[in-house]
Image 1 (cartoon, rainbow, N blue to C red):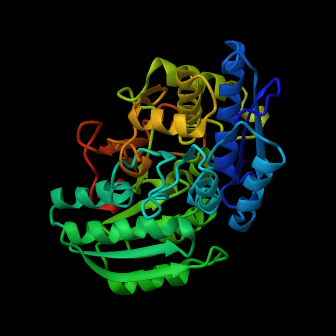
Image 2: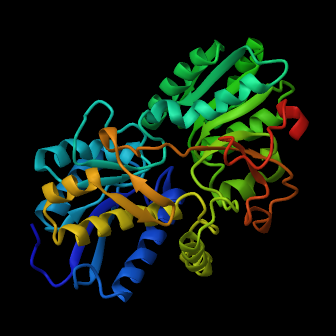
Image 3: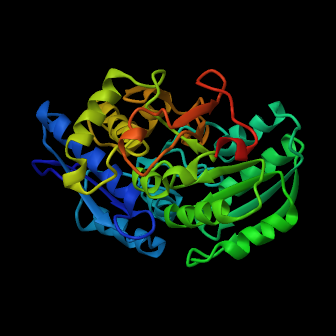
Length: 394
């Protein structure tokens, strides 16, 4: 139900401070570009759009209260899902109770057990999100000689890591890999050497990592300092997609293989996403956000396109009507056409695996065209074969 105010108010929260602040601020900047674009075209249903965004600080316990405030005090017309599982999942009980239309950004498997029909995921992991995020990493192993036989799983002790680790275990079994070692670490960890020492003792062929931004940096540095080199390392690290993380690590990233959702490769570059990135990068330094925006901006902008196209098609803000439309429609976005299937996940997965190669320093420009993050999976989009083992790409 509209609040009858002059503007259309869209409310949500993001982790603008805390461990995911770098990615959240990048998403926020892309959403503000969308806001400027749609208002420049006359707004939504002829009304200007206002974004009401609160900072949850990366604290999941704050999320339910912030959404209750948005709905009951701010009287927003629409609510939007934040970034990542840690922000989206705590909002779901209230969203379900109020029967709201809810499009979340990069939450992995948020709706797998809830099965709420009004939830839609802006993440290209497809009908089986847990497995899809990590399958490319494990599938690459069967083409290598000698074929890897064992894997170690190392993950942060946090909500976001639970689903990727479940997927990694399923894929390890699928591809005939024995889990030789498994460990979790606290997000407060600063010394990663003991963790890598334990991995080295296992003698694993593959090292699968599931980490946040800051601990991704610590893990990469610890792995590069260590004498032990697995045959392949990476997998589900949140961080190497971020420009600040890339430039901080520089050549230390060479050889790592990790998931991504979009990179500036010719096969993925469209006129829409190029226009978005041009607008994003023109003021990214002044906005103090990820300078390139490759990871967050395309999907964050597409998230807003899904919402606006559903509103325009249904002619209003009725949550049940928006839900019914989104479950049957094809949305035309900067990342391509999107349709939603089971549990609001994308009907077709589109997760990439990239290998970092040829990084020579800590400069930004080398990452602008995607030539330092080579798509190695899926085969239809691959621009080169995997350099194996890991040490050969250092």
